[in-house]
Image (cartoon, rainbow over all chains, first blue to last red; front, top):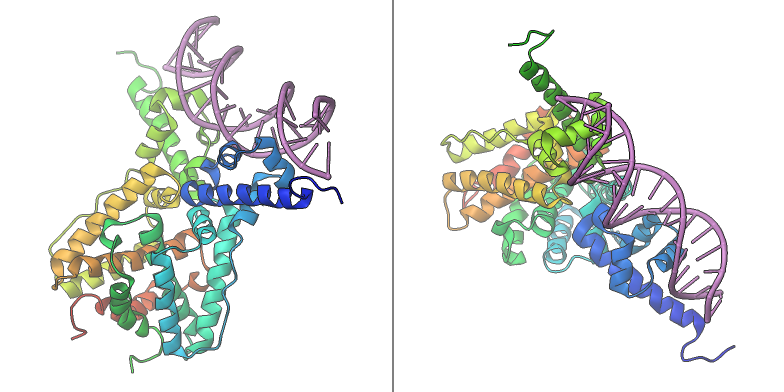
Length: 188
Length: 188
DNA sequence: GTCTATACCGTGATAGAC
DNA sequence: GTCTATCACGGTATAGAC
């Protein structure tokens, strides 16, 4: 194999990484439409056409940049699930993975991001519904999920003043009884 | 004054109305970026340049199309506010004003829509905070507001399957105790 | 095999023709 | 008062330079 300063494959891998990093940051901040291939290329210090060469089109670049790590599902009881959800706040507050942010940023205006969001949320609803009793378990699970969605949107994307700088423990403390009202047919 | 089939001013008013209606529908469905002036003009059956002539630029067209009717504020107690919020579900479910939908659709990716959303939500938070006790009234009010925001996003914009076709009364029934956990320092 | 230059089309916007 | 160039910019495809 030819021995330059870096092996060709390694060099390519690094360039791809820079492009994906730049794309992730821009998609998260500006959304799909306002993020230009040219801007991504500029941020990654490569030629715009190279981005096309690597990823084919903007859609595929987006897909690879936001690739969200699938939620590891474990069998938990209702209270455990509430704690799990409250735990995700911690992430949502501090630094939710940039890929997830990018996906959420575009989910209302980009069809594929919307589909991806529906899938992720649907999985969470499934998981919650399995662990809570009642005929309306899915509806309750959906409401719990939209509550967390609203929090993420309000805090991370809209950056509402009232939520800025609030320690996650305080949110968790207030939201714990709130979510618990939805985990069972009775408050119990 | 010249007497054609319609007075010039009236004719203009109708054309403007058609354009605004078409714009509202398209902005609500596709968001700001994906809505093209040309498509709005096509839907309103006018020349694209006429849209520019009337509104100057796309931004101003958006501003006038989504102009959201300010929430009439009345002094209510905490429980009354919960019922008020639950009442807004009814609207959010059936047919939330298209202008509000358009604004929400773009709030994550369009700076001005984001500012508008922050303003509307901020007003609701103010209003709620006035009516609930406790040092953390604003935080509680913000959480209540993001809960409703999440519901609107999940139902109206993402159109989650689990919420489609669910009668508003059922949502209200489930969410009433949920919201009540946030209206006071104690569940009481 | 990698990267660069360039051209094409649709969009927002402006200026001017009818 | 309407519509027709025309421009700049962005996504994308292609050809070709190294």
